[in-house]
Length: 215
Ligand SMILES: O=C(NC/C=C/[C@H]1O[C@@H](Sc2ccncc2)[C@H](O)[C@@H]1O)c1cc([N+](=O)[O-])cc(O)c1O
Ligand SMILES: [Mg+2]
Image 1 (tube, rainbow, N blue to C red):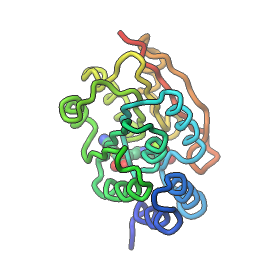
Image 2 (cartoon, rainbow, N blue to C red):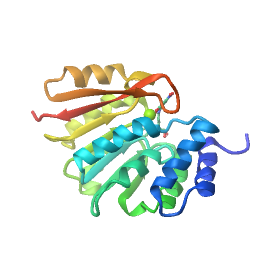
Image 3 (cartoon, helix red, strand yellow):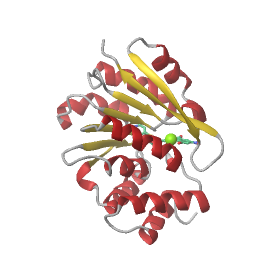
């Protein structure tokens, strides 16, 4: 095929969005994915829930697992005050290259640190390499079978502390049953489900917000 879907998403941003205007980047991607080609961005409906959680937490340090084209990275970064940042991990170099351009178009590159690699390899190095004490907010939107192991790894590395908020996409569709069972049954988390829909569709999906209560 000629171009990839992420490349077509970037083209839509470059055609329809205004440089330096994050909202126009978000609107351009949502319009493209709703009217041209579906893509696995968190989308506008769940995106509004993500926005409300970011505003509620007012995080200084955010970790995003799974950048894809940078749609949720832009949604998060546009809400961050000066000095706050989002570190976003992306495994696929082609997706990372597109996401860098989407983030640049939105004018938010100073608030974003895009790291290419696998969460499992990078999480143990977060403290040393980025000087992170603990994350205030973690947005999980990568491989669904990695949600639980990466959460446990974040705990083991001391990157989740009392008050840290985990926000997980797709807990219904495609689903993350082992992760849900863990955060809902653990005495160390206070978990709640925000019912919504799978991006750009009528199917049910939702976000799970889990606050770490400390040990
Ligand atoms: O599969 C889904 N998401 C997986 C996302 C994966 C993203 O994260 C890295 S993997 C990685 C990144 C960092 N570290 C390790 C691995 C991939 O390169 C991709 O950019 C998904 C699927 C549907 N759906 O309807 O089928 C809907 C959604 O909202 C979804 O998020
Ligand atoms: Mg998702």
